[in-house]
Image (cartoon, rainbow, N blue to C red; front, top):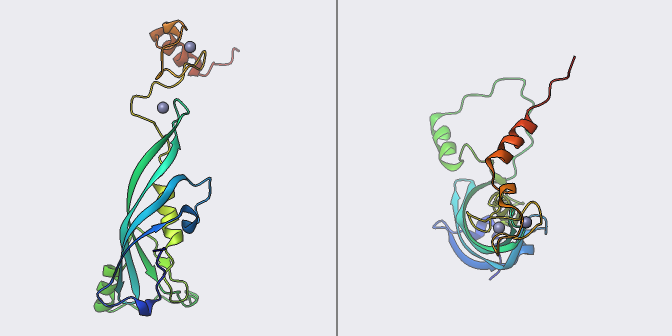
Length: 196
Ligand SMILES: [Zn+2]
Ligand SMILES: [Zn+2]
């Protein structure tokens, strides 16, 4: 089953539970966003809350990352939980010349229950729920800034480029791990004062 895209009227009061698979391009993922091995497995809960739609679920898939230390590609299986709120397209906002009329407490509590403060709600397209863009953002947010093939990846030798996970190279060890080198780096980082 492909990514669901129900009309509001197709979401029953008790909600929709959908299990499906999706190809990366169904999520509009570009090669720059993430490299994906195979397809995604999705479990999605869709609930109508007043005039909003609350979506939650889990996206599972395998990403191909490049380690920042050894530059090798590695597979990273990932399970990404997500929640999002969708609102109908808002009518054009009136110019705010006057202070808004205070809302009744009833309206206030309803609004608080449906929309999470921290997260911008998404917009329904007409009266249809489109999940692709939201899921694409979830995938991008889950991308690590500094991917590591493993916590203790030894990386490449800065001198000869040998992958030190595979074997040690013949370069003098003090060049790789010497207190004097750290000291030198430290002094190099200190900006030199201009001589007057
Ligand atoms: Zn690595
Ligand atoms: Zn080396």
